[in-house]
Image (cartoon, rainbow, N blue to C red; front, top):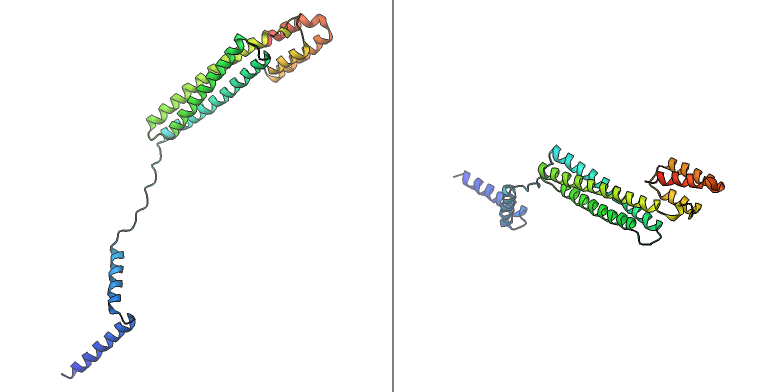
Length: 219
């Protein structure tokens, strides 16, 4: 019986501590415990899964498609320049060769667009098969672009070669110099033809042979 007062004192002291810690609201401690328990039991958020890396063969096909699209864009730009030069060479006059060059340039640009679309599809491919299909499509479009560019170049060459300034009767040194500059020729060859032209301009007897040389050199 002598232990009962001691137990009462210990219990009272414990209740006092609880009262003090809880700020006079013991239920707050219970609510806080429940919240901590709920937080402990809640599953931790999971990080989003990283996108799967494409297989090596797919990455290689995507690169090939991109390279083909770049080559097609370059060829289309060349075809457009050649067609513009052909148009300028005829000074806007109607010419079958000029029309052919312009049509070929338009075909080259359209093919380059197809190559770019195929490359874009390849970049979004989720399998090696899709990437390879896109690369094949881009390659075919690039080939079509190059073919159209060559056609434009040949047509433009016909335009330049048929210029009246390249005839003895219609010879104009300045106009022939422009034709040489616009021709799709290496710079060294252009320089050689220009030197021959200057010599012919100073010696009219050399004009026929020089014009033949220039016409033969034009693509």
